[in-house]
Length: 145
Image (cartoon, rainbow, N blue to C red):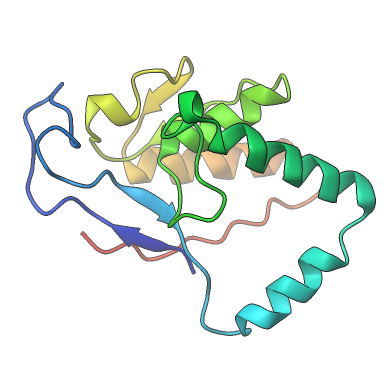
């Protein structure tokens, strides 16, 4: 299950979380079970093309001009904008559907952003599943406010 950490205080719309001394909301983390060694073993077993791609991303994300633009691969997760931006590296411009308000500086560059209620999102996923030939697997994590 992904960890979710919310800002300690709310910010006015359009204000910068980092300039206000508040950490941005990030999604990520490693589950306690299985152990981290299992993930490391899996990484070593990735095909060579994946390992090359992973190393290239790591170098890209660690360039001084890209710090904060792309998620740090060895960091504590990523903002929604950083996750979205990784897809655009491969020419995929996905939709980002949010079910709650987020600070503008964490989502300002997402060109396909939709705000929906949790109920609307579940209904959209149900409709999508009904038109797909294979079932849509959905795992909903519990996020703390």
